[in-house]
Image 1 (cartoon, rainbow, N blue to C red):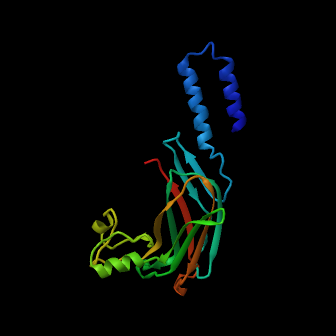
Image 2: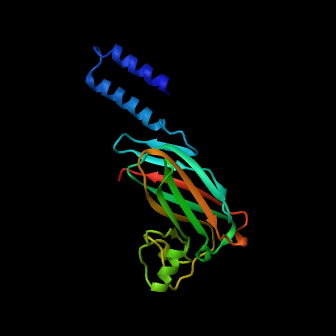
Image 3: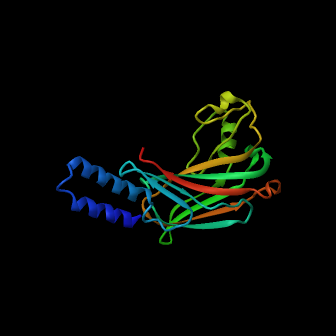
Length: 217
């Protein structure tokens, strides 16, 4: 990739007297786009994508899958990860069979560190937000400590809500659950640790994966 970029720059420089400014501008945009798409600077784990031209860039990092079971502690090095200051961390849990995830009170601890200093640290039961809303009898925002989990209901109308919730319609059995946190990030050599506890035996064989995403808007 870098070799092709150097060749293009060299060619543009050698012929700039014969080419109009519009052509040179187009060549420059191609070079910038190639660098943006290449994900230069990231040397951590997982599949990293950075597309678009700054400041309209979007960043996305998919980390390797790991077992979702009690006692698991998975540490990821994400050196060179970039963002717009905040990232959406999404935890996806996949079960071997259909399961009522509204009953899942597994404890998931997420810790983001930089130079051995905590940058972000949250720990709560996955269904804590849902339990609180059921007690309150109405939808409410999750507390800063709680995961926001998106449950699938047996009603299509409920599922079309911006954030589905119902006191009367039951949660549908599914094989996957997505939960999220907004976390403060910048551009740094982070390491991310996920600790799992209190997973029921019925979810033996379940897996989990983590994704970080940061958009320009």
